[in-house]
Length: 441
Ligand code: SAH
Ligand code: SF4
Ligand code: F3S
Image (cartoon, rainbow, N blue to C red; front, side):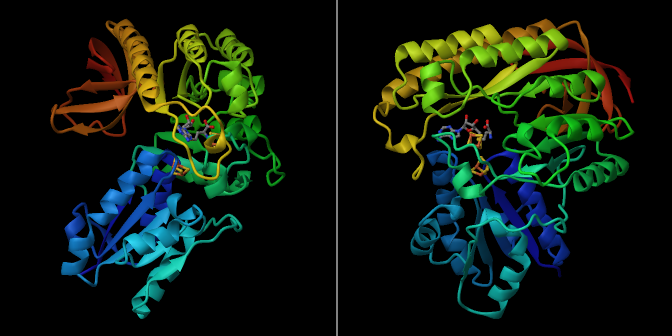
């Protein structure tokens, strides 16, 4: 019988995609996937360290495996991802959880096959975390589980050093994939029937800036959108310091590019933005929104927002509230600032007490939800195009998203997954929409 693998992923879309690549390596080695942790012969934790709770989550789940490992000593437990890239973390993991078999990093997950073979040949645990990113590996083929959506990396790493953020320390310097590799990957995904492609990078707008590519982001986007076939194209994340009109011009040219830009603002206060080292102002951000909407009036914007950054006053926080109202985001991820070891902000004066942080996040979540709800209500009576992504067993309905990321549920007599469905919206419930099929492609 074939050996089975189970992967536990934390963190962002980039990490989810990296787990697909880890699954690709394991599949190539002859493993098959299992949903049941107890049935696995190898369990891989692909960790995140963006906030403290992401780390606590992983620590809890790894610790919970102690008993299983005792009962099943041949089980291989491997821990990788962003957390193991942090200074001192591999040592801490070894000490806390001596039963871990393999510790690897986000920068050398492509070597997992050889690390597993080494572990199988020896009793001793294998600890190998590379500090410097090597050449981009193009030979690791992902085992994709997100049909009809597919993620495609365009850059790795980050050079921005926002003062709160650990990503540049754990993911290394920014590297761009070659345009020919990206274009060939998207071409074959479209041929295989994928219907939504998302280009991934910490700051997609700086694509090619390190000289590795002979194109900038707008040119790359144009080239990818020119690939024939019906599919949706998304990109994330855009950084407001680099979001330019040439990208919007390319969006205007190609209808297959979704009219949704994820443009994290983080704060509405110039004082806080400066302390965050974001390198744009509130005014520049609002100008960009105006520019986008003047060329594409139907465009929507989503965001990431942090509250409780060191030194944030009530007046600063209220500036964030007023910006949220002014932009009228389609939705936003909201976070409480979490100090990360080694970052500038963790050393700053004026760390905000937890009760104030909690109060601000609650007010902000309420505001963001009220905007999202209001937008949902406007959908009722309209017909929208949904790309069906799955079936919700509990509701007994298919579900999918429109180009703005809004979730729509509907009933269908035939398998709708992977198809574009025109849906007449009959009801909005919070952020979810319900509708009836008008047509299906
Ligand atoms: N590269 C992207 C985002 C990467 S991390 C960008 O620049 O926007 C995703 C989000 O996590 C960030 O946008 C930020 O809002 C949040 N985040 C990052 N570090 C954080 C920290 N230390 N505490 C709280 N939130 C954080
Ligand atoms: Fe972190 Fe800033 Fe880089 Fe985003 S751009 S990954 S927030 S350092
Ligand atoms: Fe992503 Fe978390 Fe790493 S957000 S890049 S998995 S630190």
